[in-house]
Length: 160
Image (cartoon, rainbow, N blue to C red; front, side):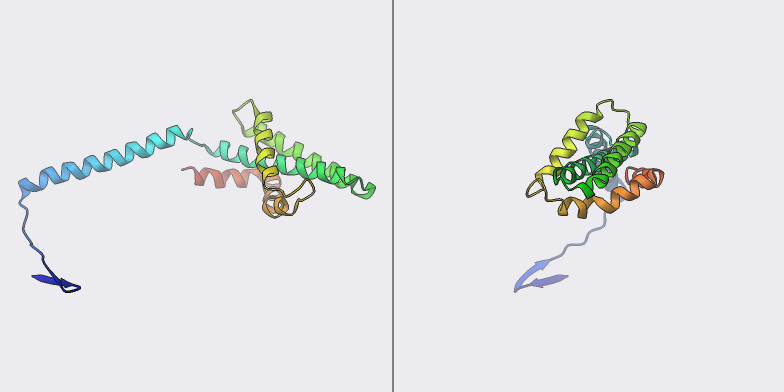
């Protein structure tokens, strides 16, 4: 049998492999599969083996940071009519932190909050630019605070 690729002829050789010759190939393929499984398991262990609770906790701490930043920005605007909004946002930040503590095995949530705030502040143009943060967190944070169990179910499926 011959095949032509762009004017170059190549001949395909077909041979039959007997049963004894197949055995080393089978062991080789099984070895490759085992290596891939071990590498995946090792990578999972090195990543800390993110659990559903850890995923939910991080999400809640991102929400707590968002609400805290928004609360501080609204309060800094020094508009009397917005002070209730700032207080409500601060309360939502506290609610997210309380929920995170419920699902977390990590005792250092204050550090996690600082890291989340730092990540979010880096995306802002200035201290009053909440547009990007609102687009990213407003809806999802409302949902996770309203029904954390549903979000935990998502994380359970995502980390299987």
